[in-house]
Image 1 (cartoon, one colour):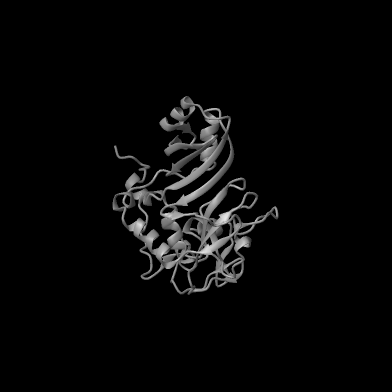
Image 2: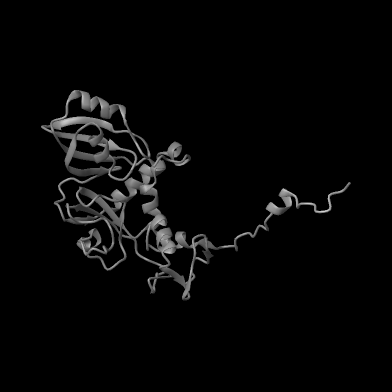
Amino acid sequence: MPDRNPRPSRTASATRPVVAPAKGTAKVHKILAERGVASRRHAEELIAAGRVTSRGRPVRIGDRLMPEAPVEVDGTAAATAVAHRYVMLNKPTGVVSTARDERGRATVVALVGARERLYPVGRLDSDSEGLLLLTNDGAWAERVLHPRFGHEREYEVDVEPEPTSAQLSALGRGVDLEEGRGELFGLRVVGNGRVRLVLRTGWKRQVRRMFAAVGLRVTRLRRVRMGPLMLGSLAPGKWRELTAREVRELNVHIASQPGKATRKGKR
């Protein structure tokens, strides 16, 4: 006997009309990155916070526009063409790695004092110091930050008490953290209570948490290298423009890692 109340098939109910994106359009977070407003990730945060509009109307994550469409952030138009800048800063302690701070603390962007809308490439904690990049080239920043491109970060770290061989061995084997197994590379002692190490992941306060897990307290953390770029003799609080050669070398470093560029990196 036929069912008097047939249920719609699961296949039919799950079918949705597929709308192809309009030819030539791009997602708004990508447009913002290309215009030098922010990295793609930060642009998504701006959109989610309701700070991005187009012709006065709010945009949502996933919305697409023509590349030349007007876009506003906090009511200020994002220019369609910008001159890209690449800045290296030796961030001192007590300065936050943001464009602005609700608590009124000094920011890395204020240290540079640029008229352009620069933003930091990655972060250093307020109590950490050393090499930090700032730019208004969102696509470049995305390539530098994404772990699939394999940019190493090298740090000089002072710890208390003096690390034992057992503690160093434990760090060398890796430490389990919430995000996964944290690993340090090139770990070596360079002085009394001072070590050098390399990270290939950028988890929040990763170095401090790993050292704490083996009973060591970090008293100073300074980033001295990012990819092929070295901090060198740049004084704390000072900054300089990257040379065309340094920008080119960083791009070559990215392009030279095809294996890593084709698989998702661990965060």
